[in-house]
Amino acid sequence: MTGRELPDAAVRVQPGRAAGALAAPGSKSVTNRLLVLAALAEGDSALRHPLDSDDTRAMRRLVAALGADVRDGEGAWHVRGTGGRLSAPGAPVDVLLSGTTMRFGAALATLADGPVELTGGPSLLRRPIAALTGALRDLGADVRDRDGHPPVRTGGGGLRGGPVRVDVGASSQFASAVLLVAPYAREADVELQVHGEAALSYVELTAEAMRDWGARVGGGDGRWLVARGGYTARDVEVDYDASAAAHLWTVAAASGGAVTVTNVAERTLQADAAFPRLLAAMGCGVQQDGSALTVTGPPRLRGLGEWDLGAMPDQLPSAAVLAAVADGETVLRNVAVVRGHETDRIAALAGELAKAGVDAEELPDGLRIRGGVPELAAPVRLDTHDDHRLAMAFAALAARVPGIVIEEPWCVRKTYPRFWADLARLGLRWEAAA
Image (cartoon, rainbow, N blue to C red; front, top):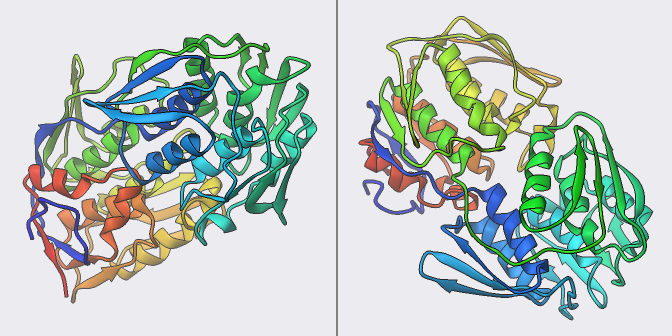
């Protein structure tokens, strides 16, 4: 097997230099937000070049269960909206492992005309949601969880509206979920204030998308006012996925290669779009020509010293892998939130990198890594913990360090199903490992 398809067994990547140009997939963050907006809007919308992955399929199934009509077109998803009049599906909706779908769905379900139950896979049912369900209750919703975790059950009937505070310490998506349904409050405009540490750029991404679809959203920087109203159908192009692009550039940086992502938006609110600045600080060449951004890895990366990743916590796995093959020490801070992602990413990275001979120390809010390309005496198997970002980061490590086998590589289906095929397009071969 050479990477032309999604692997169905553990893989071994042959070290080498990644080189080539390709387009990143559509953004998961944007696709899922636009699915919600289109489902609530009055009229027919088209989402062009959306991301088609496990996570976005879960959101698509959810909005369809709540009454939106979603159909495939040529390179687009066509959505007939509900005008905010959602219907109860009559059976529990399984959102699988999609945290975004569970959070946005919990807010959407409050607008239905009857009871809705949302459930999911075991790891999703361990993720906290009390801050969101509590905020929805403060807005007049009938919503319950299980000891602060999913499943979530709503009684329908909508939101009253008014002021609400949301703790975003566990996820900024709690605030985005409230914002997305706020225009459909029955009695009063929604005044949202957040507290807790979070990557608020994703909330700004939500607010900007709402404005584009006709909602009246004021404020920002932790406080928003959403007027009652609704959304108007649109025909839109889905932005590139900055998080996926970061994984491709990580492979270039780790392998000493050169990778061009050809569809980089010159203006985007995606926080991970700032990842090339981190790569430049490690000694990579970064050059943008219009929508094409090329990262060239140096012969030796340099450590970052101390780096605050709070604005883009999803990139902890990539940054940790690069720190592992860089000269010097790197301390990655302000990412305690990732302990509640698909797995405890801080603990998982510390443990798996240690298997590969990396001096990685777990910190309360991040990692301390003492770099230097490890030399393995024998092959090691790295567990992805069913976490797509760990799998993609470990592929970059394997491109530099011989002898690494990556378990359960198919978990990239969650956000980037064609990752392994794209890796092969960049000249990095992989094969099934016994």
